[in-house]
Amino acid sequence: MPMTPVPDVTLTPVASFPEKYFPENLAVRADGSVLVTVLLQQELWIVAEPRRPVLVHRFDHPVTGIAEVLPDVFLISLTEGYTTHESHLARLDLTGWTPGEPVSPEIVFTFDDRVRALNGSCLLGDGVLAVADCFAGLIWRVDLDAEARGGQARIWLEHDTMADDPDAEVAPPRQPGVNGIRYSARTGYLYYTSTAQKVFMRVPVDPATLDPAGDAEFVAAIDNADDFALDEEAGFAYVTRHRANTLDRVPLIPRHGSEVRHVAGEPFDERLIGPSSAAWVPGEEGRALYVTTDGGTTAPPDGVFRNAMLLRADLHRQ
Image 1 (cartoon, rainbow, N blue to C red):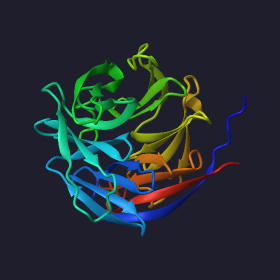
Image 2: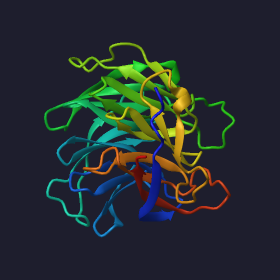
Image 3: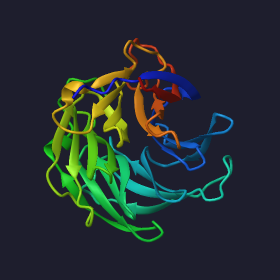
Image 4: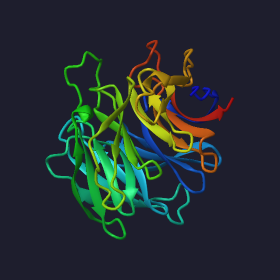
């Protein structure tokens, strides 16, 4: 069968953050506003109308993953991945909240001493959260109580492809292993990137237990992969390649790795420096993405730092 044509992409800046900020992950609320976790500054921001970032909260630890576990209730991953490895889940309820008002996040779960560095997260089902641990080389499962104010955690899956590579000849910071994770109930798989191992993988999920129904399976080779958004209907993931400064389209099924294609950033586009995460614009799934960038905080391609950004990427089907 012929390969689906690669869409043309239009990148439009939505909001700007200061230089040397590191937007790590994002979540889009039902009202269209965008929550952005900022790793190094230990902050959570929101981009709403008018399109300017507003600080929501400054935490006591670096901030990585964010997942909506109940309507307008989010669990945010806090982790000292490069130092003590102390890691928590913070609950933030934004019901009825207006940007600029104070918030009161509460720590609802603390991981045990097996944890090393929390990264991406996603829901597997009602009250079941999956969290990547990029330096332990595994994915945690957290079973939450009814209000997401507590829970129990266990290792969901550990696999060689999830490991980091501390001996890699890559400039600091240390490259993570398992990084972005997304679950697709439609396909029945949890997908993940492993930055250090340079792979895009999938794991079959039992729909009843939400545990793995088999081993991790290789889908495609891709280097510098960070987070991604799933287009389940078309059968692709749109993957942010953080240090490579591109957005790539990756088929969701194995044995199609030769069909991985750059859709933005090749040729070089200074708006797309350090892309870190992606999520669909509400109501425009498969057609428009929000993408965060760090402006070169991690690896400035020409030695120059730019402002970190929230971009809109419109996919124009051919």
